[in-house]
Image 1 (tube, rainbow, N blue to C red):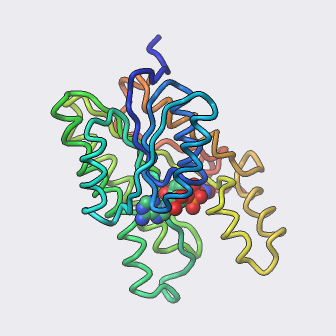
Image 2 (image 1 turned 90 degrees about the vertical axis):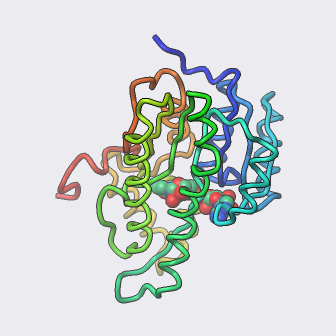
Length: 257
Ligand SMILES: NC(=O)c1ccc[n+]([C@@H]2O[C@H](COP(=O)([O-])OP(=O)(O)OC[C@H]3O[C@@H](n4cnc5c(N)ncnc54)[C@H](O)[C@@H]3O)[C@@H](O)[C@H]2O)c1
């Protein structure tokens, strides 16, 4: 069987200062990779580096806003050779077509879609030139179907699935694999903030957990395990996949009946 080990690889994870990105950075370091934490909030990025170093791993931080080509060019100069690229940085937004403002829609596309495009544009050409590499993008179950009151977010995550599938096809014979993860609800600061915005946060948390077939939220480490698998040689024949990590949420058409 091919190995899940990432020994000798360099992994760059955007938005790795919190939540899923932090868990992915830790899991990849534990699997043997050197990890570059690319984070808009430098202090949060440093926390992740400390966690990894505390566990005996290798990590460095670089301050990057994924919407800034200048930031990405600077990060590329520091870390030109990346074997594993995790485009995880993303933001949320609550709203319908009637309540979402144009500027909020543009911000969601800028961070969640253009940010992934920019990050891939920065490191994927080098992977293609070297004939090897693995990209793992963070989409969402909201990229596989519509989500109530999350118009711009859902549109942005459908676009991440499209970016992943199209790039996977274009690069299928290059040695570079491109996949994305579609998590359901994961217990991270991102989701805790959303829950706190509801009039009854406790009821909202219970409702969110109950929509997922397994009846609970995921832990970031459960998404990270799937990212390590997709990045590793154990997934050597997997490209263009949009893998749900959602406790069965998208398995049923009528999950609440
Ligand atoms: N939490 C969930 O339930 C869930 C479900 C499905 C998909 N996702 C996706 O997973 C990813 C991570 O989500 P999370 O819950 O860990 O979020 P989070 O808010 O906990 O962490 C996101 C990180 O990205 C960083 N970031 C934000 N904008 C950035 C930018 N422009 N450039 C660089 N870094 C930036 C933040 O500083 C933060 O550290 C997102 O793409 C999100 O859409 C999350």
